[in-house]
Length: 125
Image 1 (tube, rainbow, N blue to C red):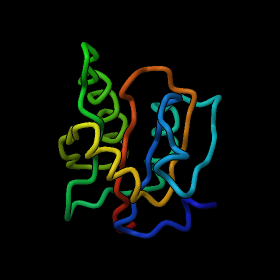
Image 2: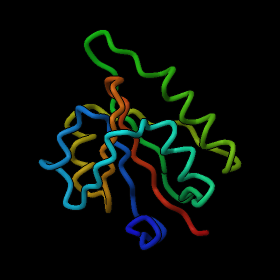
Image 3: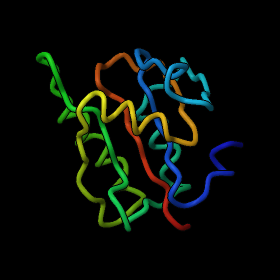
């Protein structure tokens, strides 16, 4: 229900199981049985991206954890429903947390991969 209430320009955070959503987000949905790629594949046919600004954000990799392959997977999924998908922007930790604090909805999944969080900005349908 919350996803259908979101308007253009609002952001959704698909969070991994390690993300401290209660600390940063006011509206949190728990989906511990889902992984982010499956959830993203379910959401994207219902959404377009906001192309007026950067619509895709992930946390920057750190401490030997490289999430560029995961970002490529996300972009491949998004590209199936949206044309002209922009590149992913990787934000340093504190900057990602600041942005996460402004999302409309955070969905915490059971995703076990580190730094797998994804913020997407909704466009006009």
